[in-house]
Length: 398
Image (tube, rainbow, N blue to C red; front, side, top):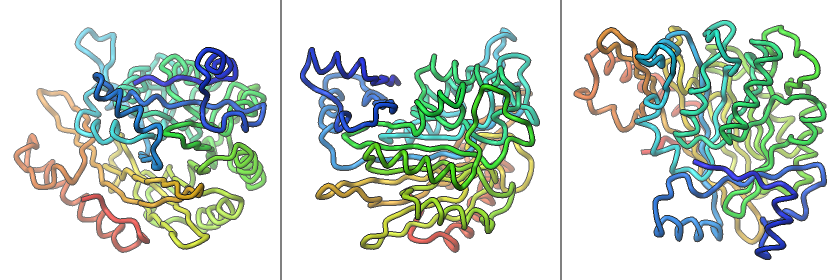
């Protein structure tokens, strides 16, 4: 999967040689950078090229949001290859890859640093670069990086994570090389299917570890959030999306601070809010009324992790469809899909796979032992009970 960074220079060259330029790029503030997500996630030939061309004139955009991508010690050991030098996480995404790659824009929370060796899990995460490479290979377009583990490995962790994501051509936001770097790159403006998305990422904390100068991590402050939303609106986006790392770990109900902050952000102009950090599921609400179209998912849970606490062995992917009608963009569809982390021990080695629950809940023969199937069934039952009771207008994908 490739992504082409469209800078002012690239736009000028495109204008001179082709006479074409990205939708509404001329209306961007001078300090903003716009990034175009390539339509070539799964391009294999002329037929796919034609389909990609047709999507450029589309009046809809499919967004897919995933929860926490963790890097616990068990995951690191599992990814280590027989040569005892290299790492490979590709297989983790084997059963979920088609869902990710089929979305127009796929976004997840990278809750580790890529600080290099020694590789460590909790409490100070540093994962092999291969984890980010596997995310890229699976079709994830954007990784948000502001969370309570952003500063786990100090300056090197912040800087090297950014450099590796740049090298892999993965878009990111939330952490920056400096405050001036943040002013240039945030909000992250993404162009896809003639839609313009403004993405903002903030975290409540960094586990009490100060952010070292000159680096910058977006820490939640109401005035800063409102200012960033206002800045995002200057780019004339079709939607302003906030990825907020908030709430209390292992709690299935959003707390009062989450509820209040969501209202503040919506009133300031946000359209979509996606939550992470609790490592368990929380409710989603889609308001779809004339003059009031907005969506919030308070917590998506874990996408890939190796936590032992109850209910942390899975998450949900949120799929939203943006539709433009007569110049007005709204969320026209909102669904969720349960995912479960299948971690069997095979030939003395623990493996990790992300399973779309709906595809495997009636396939006991797939699992290495009945205990794994039963665990997944328990997770599905508890999760559906929660979401089908607490969600508002957000149904499970069948």
